[in-house]
Image (cartoon, rainbow, N blue to C red):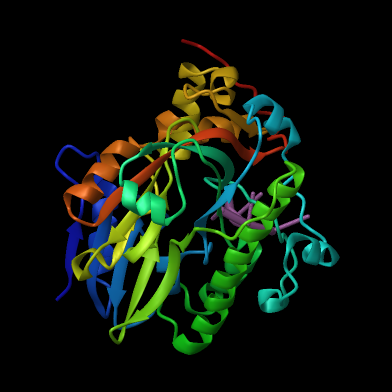
Length: 369
DNA sequence: ATGTAC
């Protein structure tokens, strides 16, 4: 008998489709518990924003972007003028050459020997953001992290690019949505993708620091939100849910609203997990359709908090509009209200890099309203 | 989310 618990207050918007997906997952063989985070929303087959515990390992519950996560790096820049810095961001759609890795502070091995796409951000909800610390909500914890109001941070949200996708596909081509018959073999490849994702985030931070004339730094936070953990003799699958057992986690807002760095302290009922972001409120298709009537490209590129969004792909700009996401304050309020996390600081975007590449030529945004 | 996929 399995259980489903969703950690969202009645006033938080959770799509019924997402809850239905949680129950469908809970009904799978071996499943013991599904914990939905306050950023829960429907995914492809499996919900996003959930920690799912089972006696058997289901690769599809983690999805293709194994190792996706968010890292935070302190950075010092003299006069952070968004427009000027946006123009200096490196091209993070172009991979780094393996020979350049020592220059970015990496002389170790590349997990799985996978060089394709290394140092690139990808698409979708991925981003690299220069932000400043806004409100300090837990002064003691912020001080322990070396953070004060006004400090600058690089926030990197990205994953394992083609590597994780390849690993999931190798499984699904044979076993579909079924469990991994040899969990250890899957886990070995999975662990490589998790390490690759973390390395990728470090490389991007180093690339940006280099381009902005700043010194590279070690991350103060780096938490993966798509992974499997072997815990208490079971498989704890996290899909869009960050490890929340005594860790610090950056819960991403949107490209135009603050994010929250939180101290997580989630227990077993929450799958030892916390939300990974604001969570989509609309599908990409809805966001595109409604956004085109509601926003101009200009207002999405220059946000209400004064930040600049670097995004050559107009379609992606609409899909990722702040209005396509839930209110981050509501998500954080639920995490705090259910005792899963304590907010430490907010971060306010200055420059968010999405992509320099242009989108499909056929896409021409129109403002009808 | 992804060098994708009816």
